[in-house]
Image 1: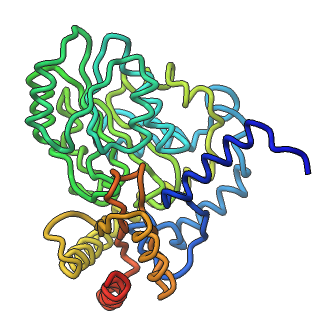
Image 2: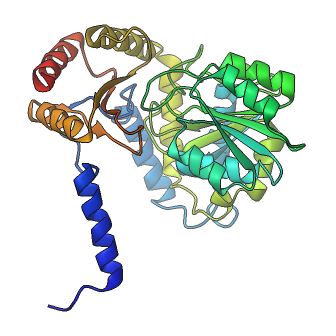
Length: 372
């Protein structure tokens, strides 16, 4: 057998390190009762979305064949962007093939050299990577601590534009950012607020438009919001929404938009159906709130959202409890560093409308047995 070369040896050593730390991940298809996905409203398999998307595939084909600035543009993209902007209450929106790309686009195009990005310490990896790729300076502030942020903004020198970057609903902690306090800081300092609405859009707000929606018309907070369409909306991609001039600049300068092949045109039809259902069936959101509140009470969590963290501590223990629950028919996954801080490995319980109080009771019983 030929000798292993230096590069392969190095990579294998890194994999061994992951094994020793209990951090090796494995791809695993869905199996059992869904308590881990982001399909909060149960729209991913809704017949209306499937029917409209299938019909659109027959009309437009499977692929867009190029970037939107080349041959990949379709009228259906313009139409769904216009509709989402109306839904969000902004002047314009721009559609990207993923939330990750949308966050990279916003943070690499809008902040410039000499600017400062103030980023919550628990922001999603895509926001962290976007800030790192930006030419702006970066300052990390304590999670959801508006007072600490205000102090850092006063202390940080620089004549450039300041940006506050946060999620509205944090993806693994299930808690909410103090957006009203951040908006006040922006008005006082001239800073710009950028809000990732990945886990809030479709659910929160008067019409499900998200938590940043009601502030969308008030400058300078927020400048833009990033709204993932592959979670509560049940499809794929993400909309960046904001004033016309900001969205036009992204279309002209954001590399993830300019140099990416456009999404399949048929997703626009599915997104249109999703917005129809969100606007016409508010009972879906109401039921989600009921189930989330019930799950939090059963798990001993006093406040929060449809995302309920169960912190177990060690990586090995989180994996063992998740595997025990999977054996009982509940699809939950262990969330480990670097997604969460060291020593806080957990189960991320994600409530959706296809559950029931009886299922939640059974799950909590199984969790108590598995973790005892």
